[in-house]
Amino acid sequence: MSAMSLESVRYGRGSLRVLNQLLLPQRSEYEPVTAVQEGARAIRDMKVRGAPAIAIVGCLSLAVELANNPPCETPALMTFVRESLDLLIGARPTAVNMKKAADELNTFLAREAEKPGCTVQELTESIIKWAEALREKDIDDNRKIGEFGAQRILENAGSTEAVCVLTHCNTGSLATAGYGTALGVVRSLHTLGRLSHVFCTETRPYNQGSRLTAYELVYEKIPATLITDSMAAVTMRERRVSAVVVGADRVVANGDTANKVGTYQLAILAKHHGIPFYVAAPSTSCDFSLPTGASIVIEERPSNELTDINGTRVAAPGIGVWNPAFDVTPHELITGIITEQGVFKPDELKDGLTRF
Image (tube, rainbow, N blue to C red):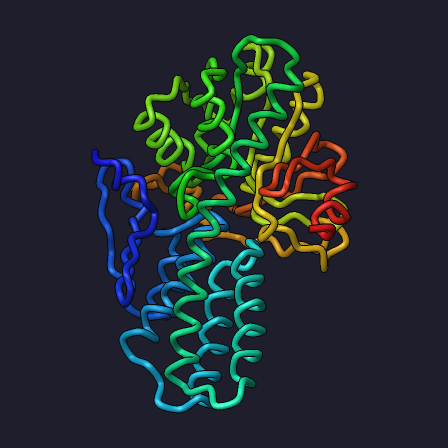
């Protein structure tokens, strides 16, 4: 594997290829995305996943289509962008990053269009540059999240010993433009020489932990062990876990957090064992328009994701299936929310972020 194999997105002006994460870890294949429809399909089919990566691929698919097939008139451009963004938002609705990016891009476009003498060519170019900048900012934000999170965990540990971390789902380079959120914290601890071990859950039913996180940890030569989701409690008790660090698809005004299903039970277990529980997420994952987690729309996935493994049926025929992709962790179970602007207690997050 080359270093390039861990990029979820390969982009150049007019060209976008995404790593098909359904094929990992057996095969590393990049598939071209030439239009918004293809970008939405890649997101919906989970070829690309992770809240930051969803927004980046969505916006870059728009940039690529505009670069290769630019509209000739401003009204057509405005309509195309608005309809494209609506399609991308609907591909996977729980993660707020795509919706937030769409709102910001629509506002930016309306402002640019009002400038005297602005041509459709200039507008198109400004949209493409906006999408390209979104990708660069994500990588920079992730590095800051990694640094802030590592320092807070080490402060809490209160000793010079290396720490042991447990994480869930995939929150690394494959879920972002690069570096990662929760896995970025792990990566930063490892770089500092202060990580003794990381335990990653398999993350059923889609196995993002065993397929993707394990893939990244092995590649980075980070000391790691894979466990089943049902082994989390005994791991916390027996293996001296110093902290739990997870990602987030949406964080609301009171600090409640939606993340990959199974996160809520980890927070309860961490509370019981007296282990700090951190959520690592960029401010783009924060949605302060919703007061509590009860307002978050939870995506439900097809039943065959639970009943089949690699196309082979493992569940008894005729059994009913409930397959929510996410759950909501109440804010009172969260020790701190790690953002690119610092680490906040859940009840301080909204005021803390809005000061910047």
